[in-house]
Image 1: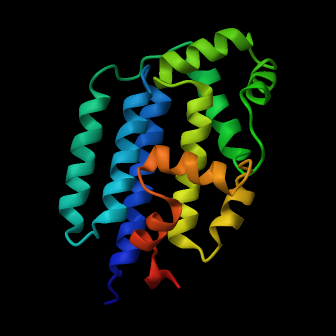
Image 2: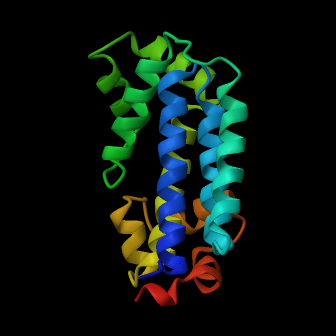
Length: 190
């Protein structure tokens, strides 16, 4: 009988968390709590290997089920444009993405000013803050999982320059990209 490695189990847990978060986002008015819990678990899984599979599964299901009881299967008119904006940002994360670009995209489906207000109400952050947070999150993943230089990562994510990237990264994460890499580089994935 072949057993999964801790790395494989952890990858399954990440996928499981994404599935539950996606389900919550699709079926609830307030999506921010699901995104917040998703980020919390991704962070926990990065810092703590999964040793007790069943314990993690039960804990994840319990936490997401608490959120799902709040307003199960309700619908928000803000949800569709917000999800569309999130999708647009995620698919263009390696491009120079501005709020103006997002609002031009949103204009195809709804009033851009309303989309901007609805996004902030749904996500508890502005579109600009979301773009920045998403870029830093992708940068963290690249710093952990690749051998790309910090300069290359800054260029890939279209930061103005290395100094801008380092400044924004430190503001969001609390440490420099170099220190983050030293503390989190995944040597076993090589």
